[in-house]
Length: 140
Image (cartoon, rainbow, N blue to C red; front, side):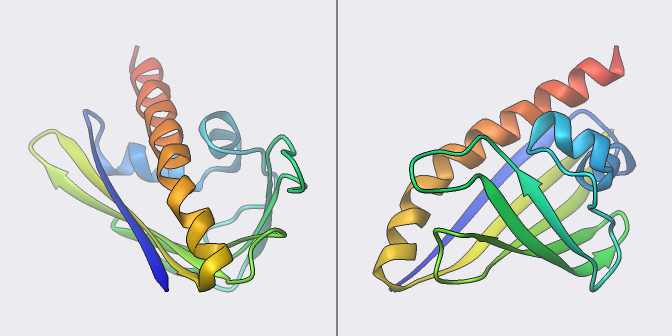
């Protein structure tokens, strides 16, 4: 069993502004999870910290895989409760005066991770709405 997630959101912000929100640790910490060591350089390892829930310690461990500013960013995504190392890919496409952001979270393999993948879309909806609100607030 493999579970993959794909979401698309439109932002009234230029791709460069969305890219900054996806790659600047201070901005990531506002709309996604706290991090102080994210750096958009291939091979760079980082940790993101959320509030622990249940048996999950709240940490996500990752490594940057692809950086094509301001078009594509991808990195690994693995929590201690996951057996698989998943891949998170952000693709930014300019549309008129805004940006269409496609998010793909792939690689939930095996029954346990497949079940985690079933719940991840709700979390991504929440985070992407937070990103949308953050970018709206920044433009004011």
